[in-house]
Figure 1 (cartoon, rainbow, N blue to C red):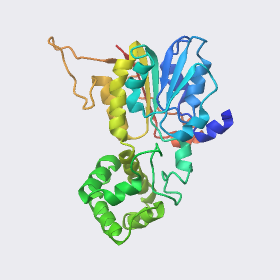
Figure 2: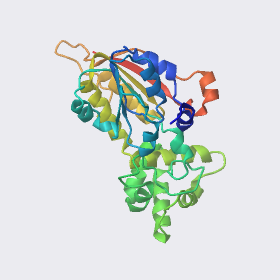
Figure 3: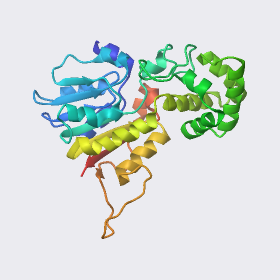
Length: 306
């Protein structure tokens, strides 16, 4: 794919800051676990010499159109939760100099009405990152119990009306199966007053997407795997877009667990697995947000494995 086409697929967020965070060694081994449009990957490749290697993970077959024609690049067609398995397969477990995870959904996904990620279009209620397998958002809405639906909207959408919403969806699906975005939006009408409509819909769609793609568990598995994949001194660079994933990343980098509990050794010293490179979270500049509004909620955290 041509570079300008790939940029339309997804504009890489905080590109300069991410690359600075990786502190790239030209002959090093790097992993981009969220390949997507390949924007970050192409810039990493520009900084590698003939000995350097870059692995790019993506489970979405649409991303395969963006694979660069470069012998130093290895594309891994998989969810990043299997990071350790693949790096062990390629003989690089424990040998990685830097790993980048841009956890945002590609602009391509929001703009492709066939994928069902956005409430701006009608179409199938799908939301799968990997369209070759797994249940769709429609399956979740129609097959989950009322209690399970309430839990996912509360936990992943942080919606205070999660129980009422679940009850309304269960009632609506008894009349006919909720198959499309239009069907889903129709069921949500009691909750979408004009002043809060966009925020409510964004939260509801986020909750469904996270559940469909098992995003929180996959993120936890990937983060744990970085401890076995990165070499001592290796950099972990993570861009988050909502409070749920940012909390997990923040806690993991600070304490080595997802609860944020500081564990101490026999002598009372705090056990640390990473050294924070930026103690204060990095956010996009005003200029970047103006240029790419979808970057506005991004937070960048950088740490070095001890």
